[in-house]
Amino acid sequence: MCTSELPVDISSWYLLLLLVTVMSSLSIPRDEEALYVRFSKEVTDEVLDRGIYTDRALRQVFQAHIARNRGKLDEVW
Image (cartoon, rainbow, N blue to C red; front, top):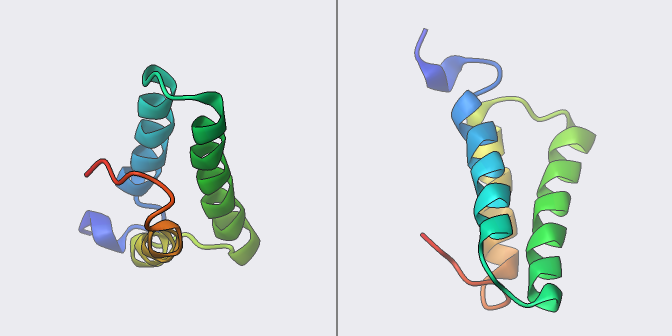
């Protein structure tokens, strides 16, 4: 079974953990940090509320939230 077929793709959850870790190591103003924390919370809430567990669905949620926040948050990658 390839990783993209697993019910929970560890790499997607790792990406969220990595995002939070990187954010905590950056020295950004508190108000800007709050925007990233809110972004992470909104993504997490949607994943939990909708019961999303596949890699494909997780990626779609991330992409939708990134698109909604384009221009508000810096894109690191």
